[in-house]
Length: 344
Ligand SMILES: C[S@@+](CC[C@H](N)C(=O)[O-])C[C@H]1O[C@@H](n2cnc3c(N)ncnc32)[C@H](O)[C@@H]1O
Image (cartoon, helix red, strand yellow):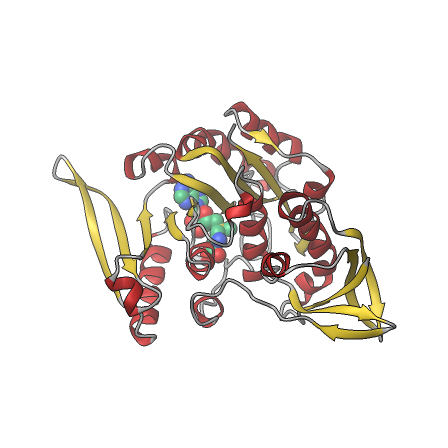
């Protein structure tokens, strides 16, 4: 047995940093169960030289194990512990593009990028094909995509990304950002924003981008697709084929604005109404064996209530211990939790 120590990234957001040791333990457990055959033992918090680490032991980790673990969002460095000394291990994260694809966008309402990566990881690992995480070009939909934090992380992994959001402002901001970024980085691509018409009426706007991580890949037709539709998420089947996504990942509206509750009170701001109308559509968009991961504010909707909505659409809610460790405080008005469900 070898002992390992995982150094947590000194995150910029203090609130998230406080929770990141616990969140990393829970996420490690999902990696452990899905792709590491339960070989990680004694995952726990440790202090080394006064600095917090996540410690665990395992029979020596191989290159592929390391390639999986390299994608933990809060991982700064991973060490083998030998006689009280730390020996750094080489990391090989999935990174197709420069990291500023994810770090540049800053705006009110952005979902923390570390948390977004955690949610995407946990959802991909909860599909019936988690071992394909590193090679396969997963098709990811964020049906409440805002200004695209999930979409950018999916692109970073080499996946195809799609999003929907009702906000025209977010749609414009994301379209402007991604086009500028792709041009500035000289990433070979083709992008267009079009009005989608039905019976001569404009029913939505759509951004469609085809990009290649390198010129050679682009020329060879080995491209990634990015599609964003500015429309209500309940209309998903008007724009995307049933069973066409491997994973759906969403951070639901928190039911709070500018850090305070509105006069309507918590109950009227619950995302449950949105989930009740949207989840049947989301479930249909998922392929069999695919998974759905949602984050929501537990102050405005109880876990069992949200889980009930997923189950009512025939999704199998994952309830083992690893999935119960993701609740964390974001601010005074938001305590965020994660639900993951699989389509049978
Ligand atoms: C918590 S935010 C997601 C932020 C996003 N993850 C990001 O980092 O930019 C929730 C999003 O849901 C969108 N939304 C709420 N109701 C919607 C609906 N019925 N259809 C589509 N989008 C909706 C809001 O416009 C908002 O952008």
